[in-house]
Length: 244
Ligand SMILES: Nc1ncnc2c1ncn2[C@@H]1O[C@H](COP(=O)(O)OP(=O)(O)OP(=O)(O)O)[C@@H](O)[C@H]1O
Ligand SMILES: CC(C)(CO)[C@@H](O)C(=O)NCCC(=O)O
Ligand SMILES: [K+]
Image (tube, rainbow, N blue to C red):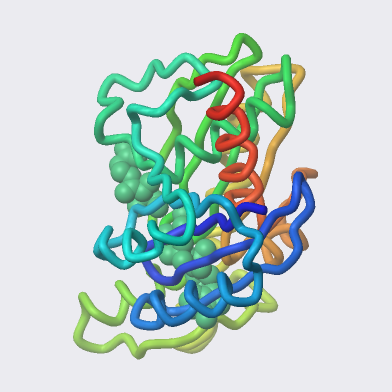
């Protein structure tokens, strides 16, 4: 059994795997980290490995305290990955993006793959059919857009997600919902159209906190899986064990 942990910029997600099957998954806040991990390990005493991908600012020590109990592995860009990294600044590439790219490469062989992670930020990661990781894009996620409009203006209220029923917003609130939500959807559809125009034999994987909403709204058909990062962590760890 393996406990995988994804430390994002907002929340922490974790899942216990037996082989490729998810036994249970969890979402929690950073301040609850040690308590939650302890509880999970108490319930799943057969866990042999704790595998972490972190882009957030949590102390490594919060995981290292479990080292007496099981093997703890933090993924870094120095691990072995199943793709050729063509990013010109590989050391600053987010480990979450590397794990997503690794999962896409292992799960969908010999295809062009685009991974869209709609979380705190939206990240786009492209791996071509020859397993070259080329890069992609980073833009603000849905909640970040609502928060930035409020934080960087005098008059815009802080709103929470509401699906607009039209693109012409006729009140301040409707105008913000249209700008944020429709803008978010148009952006992603626009990027997908761009990739589709340039590559055939193409698969799109959608994940992150806003994946379920997006799956309903995008005009492009996609493979949506909100657990894709945790599943990829499990797979990339297996790959590491088999190739070390
Ligand atoms: N309880 C919640 N807290 C924060 N965001 C939430 C919550 N529920 C749904 N969301 C949506 O999820 C998005 C954030 O995604 P996610 O939770 O994957 O981010 P994250 O934990 O920071 O991970 P990452 O850094 O990997 O993107 C927000 O844009 C928001 O619309
Ligand atoms: C873009 C985020 C914040 C998405 O979680 C993360 O992958 C990150 O901090 N990346 C570093 C910059 C880069 O990937 O080039
Ligand atoms: K993200």
